[in-house]
Image (cartoon, rainbow over all chains, first blue to last red; front, side, top):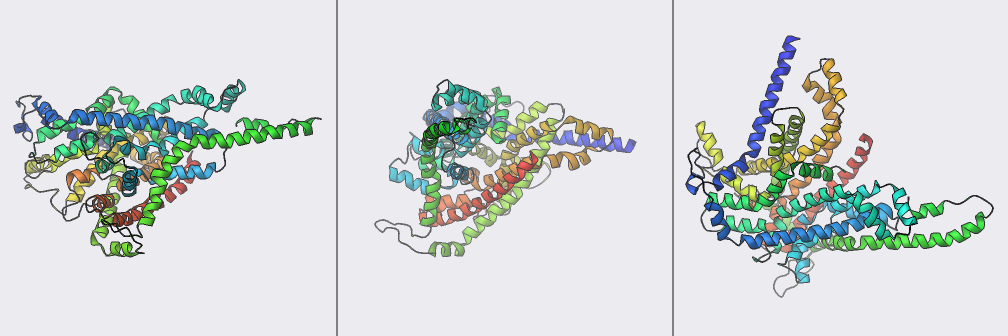
Length: 275
Length: 319
């Protein structure tokens, strides 16, 4: 009994130490980026307590590349995608949840296909389509493949299905059109799901890289991720302090939002994942 | 469920026939409206989905049987030539091999760590809110940004990894420049990025497990490890399957860190399938060959989709 208690206590200590060690390792890259960004370059790989503090790296990085334009591009991109997704996915989800139209099951399977075969892997053909449409190197071209999101349709359909049909019928008896029912009954009830989906979508497209890299080639369209990569890989010589400062800058809006609304974020990702 | 169900419920009584006749017209109208409204609502999303998912998937397949158009020369039908070239292309095999190694090592590591994190955060440990923060933060950071930080960690001599190893007398090493360590370095980054994301699904599942179970087990004197193995882990099985599918997709979908850290090198040891497609399609501009490679990726993903349908069936039994 005593030995048993001892081993279980030991495993508890082991678990706690392991968890702490892991948490330390996981925060280390961010902690390092912060260190390098707020100290002069000479200290970027040299860790002492008396290193002087500076904000100069941020200023230098900001001036070394058109980051303000990149911020604007990312902001427009993310807003455009989210707005389109909300409208398109709401309509489609409503159709799947409450209309028994011809071919509904087949259409739904075809929609779900996008969960596996994502635009991320269809880069070659989508680039050809954008060329044919003459919209290569525009912000809409970055967003278009993502606007009809199978994930959003699926998530909202599941939510709409849980709305009691009595509410729906009551509204219709009072003479509301299908569209009014959607806006007055379904959308308000799905508000937490909209928040969850919105947060997931914003973080996904704020961070998206490969497709924007391919489809853009000028300052006026490049999002932050592509701009950061061009900045970090340019021939100016590797200055880790500058790169760290630029890295923090580009992640700052999402990171701050996350730190402020941590619970909301975690719950949103959870809601969006559990279907 | 909707109006039509309501209308279909026939009243029983003397006028049933007359009423039924009158209603059938209404029903026809309502049905017709249902079909039209349903399709109208779906239409905008359907157009975009077909244009950017279904059409390109089919076009990729067709394109793999044609040559790459060059200058004034249009694409011509070449049958299986591209596939022949692919089978003879050692880099394709290497990329596939790399991707399998990458997936097979990233996925179990990520899942185990995610599970451990969830258990730790769920227990009443000191500093659990800090832990949750630390574990989840990589999820919201752009891969492209953090890959730059990791690039510094791995830099030979003064990078953090070498500085730490130096304390133990291990000589400096070019981690990303060495064919034997480069892929492992990328695997570490991928695990670091995803484990916290998957943690939250386990966390959600853990919170649904009744505390009565662990209390009962504690009364019986069951060890925590035994309880985890025989009770918690089986109960988490649906979550594990969900996480597994997503982890597999991620291992074929995300190559941002490769662009930043190794560009597929050294000697193609870190070229994953999608990265190779990107290189062939947008650096060598051999679009037909890139399409052929994409077909392989699509077949892999389709196989996974099939797996998920089976898995979705299974999940229903758990709930």
